[in-house]
Length: 117
Image (cartoon, rainbow, N blue to C red; front, side, top):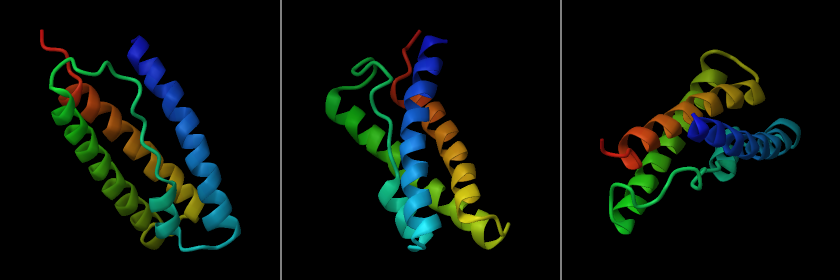
């Protein structure tokens, strides 16, 4: 339970920074929202205990893979929210951030940093 709270806290800070920068550059300054989303995408890495399941270089590769899938999910959900659901870009980013937050937590806790029992 502490890990979930810690992930939520760190994730909330990262999401706030990501959303603030996204709102400024895509919402206010009107830069292309997909490019801005890619640039502002923030990955949370310091919540789970490292080395519990894999050697360091395998762990890094798995974290990179989870993050890459998260970025692809972010872009896909954001695009669908804006282009198909016709949501405002900032609201679309909020939806995409929520989806990616869940993906990152579940993938990291179940596949990358899961403690064998």
